[in-house]
Length: 169
Image 1 (tube, rainbow, N blue to C red):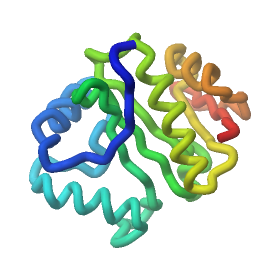
Image 2: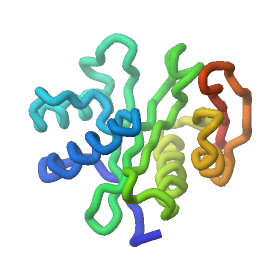
Image 3: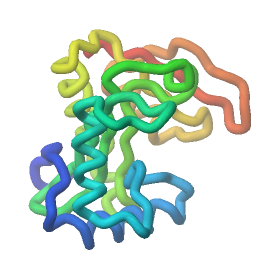
Image 4: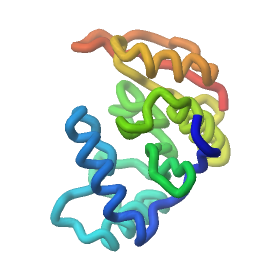
């Protein structure tokens, strides 16, 4: 791994780097900037993230969540979203923690570091057992979740099938 990874909130100076990361992950079919839309001003996006963290002004189907970027040596290498509680959809498919690593920073241990740090955030929110999911065919994510203590709860059928893990925080 490169330097030490830390999770932090997005700030005003992060716009260009974060939007570039969002575009790079779209190519993989992954939403990096949850709720980020091209027409949304950066300050308004930061306000939406703050509202989601506080549980204010939430759109239907959205739960309170803490959205943080993973920073190594001043560069955004990934992100995480820690949901404060689960609704029916998240209980089945999304789980408490959703994380991602930008393509150019993969295979350096960042995903494991992001998930471990996210579990600490979850514990601070009072979550004692975090649900974390991944596609059945995503061997990298499976290894990361299992390395962080994930115990397979079930595999949901689908294309691809979805693995559901529980991790004690």
